[in-house]
Length: 152
Image (cartoon, rainbow, N blue to C red):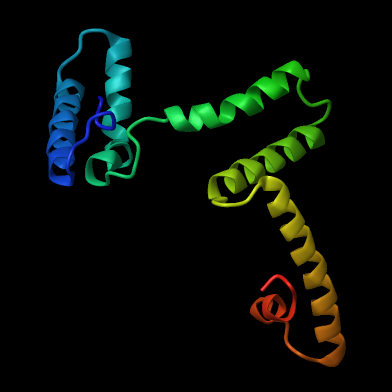
C-alpha cells in the first residue's frame, strides 16, 4: 500500500487511505467465479468493521508486519531450544515473552535490566508496606508507597 513510506500530510494520508479502502471494497464486492476466492471475499465482508481502522486512524498500521517481526525472536528461540518440555513451560515462556516484549516497547530511557530491578524493588516495598499497613490498620495505597520509598 505504501501509505507509510510516503510523507503524506494528514489530509493527504486520509484521502489516499480512502481510495485504497474503496479499491479493496470493489474487489470484495465483485462476483468471483472460484469458490476459494468467494471464501476470502466472505471473510472481508463479515469482518468489514474490524479491517479498515487504518483508513480512519493514521496511527493504526494497515498490516501486521511489525507484530510478526516482534514475534520472530521468540519463535526462533523456541525452535532452537526444541520448544518447551511441558505445558507449564510453554505457558511460562508465553507469559514472560509477553511481559518482556511489552516492557521493551514501553521503556524510553532505561534498560530492561533497570526495569526488572525497579519492579523487584517495588514488589518488595509493596509487600513490606502492605503488611505494615495491615498490622497498623491503615489502608494500603500504592501512591503512598511510592512517595514513602526511594522509588518516588
